[in-house]
Length: 296
Image 1 (tube, helix red, strand yellow):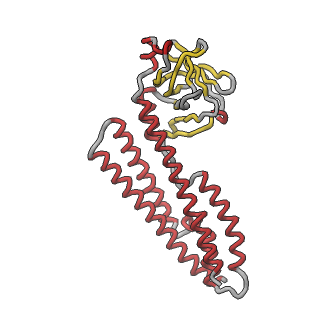
Image 2 (image 1 turned 180 degrees about the vertical axis):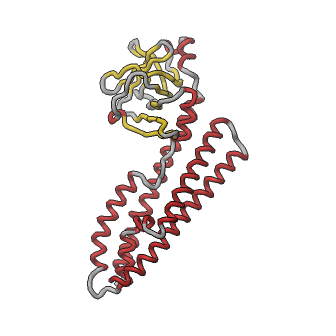
Image 3 (image 1 turned 135 degrees about the vertical axis):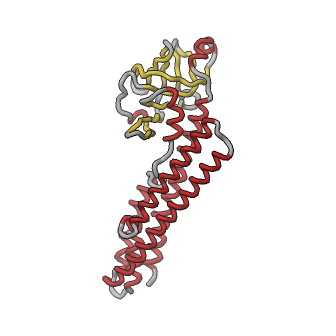
């Protein structure tokens, strides 16, 4: 008799909670690695220093480059103009980051080079990687080495590192590619479980519980629990802001009590957001069960 409820609960836990949360941790780790890469790139010597010293003639040099996009070569080459020199970046199978300022707020996207729209000459670019003289050309690419970090941006060179650190995080880690796939699988699974709970001679409580868990992802969007959903979003944005301040202060060298303060605020805001969402789900879930019991 209770099999539909158990199956619905298991499907809801797996497809609506465990898999999306696992994807959230993966997404967060990827962006954390990006921020670490940007911070490490900021510590590298500038390309102009190696060029002036003539080091690129004799050995590969790990450095950072600020330049203008000069041209596109072939399907995977990006030509950069920097300090009266041209650097060819090999972006075969590479990822690039596009940093833009929209409505006073910076956003950053991770895109495959092969899927990136055309880039107009004069766009600014920040690159960190190994540059060497090969075949008479200055080359930066993944051949035998780590792929270079490439950030296309629309601002000043002096601010690109801080802007990337600030914006380099997911808007909401819970909504990631794993979540989208998991939600789709959950809907398909629930479509096979729900008919079991709606058969004749099944107690109304079992049917109500099964239907409630089947549609649990949208519960928080229904009144009156939607108030808790908006509170959740407010605190989630606050936590994101606090983490961005923490990372920006660390980049500027502000270590110690200030860093702990922003981290503490981020943790507090994250906890508040989770509690608000859980409250919205609990309130609406209880109301839906009561309503469905009257209808079934």
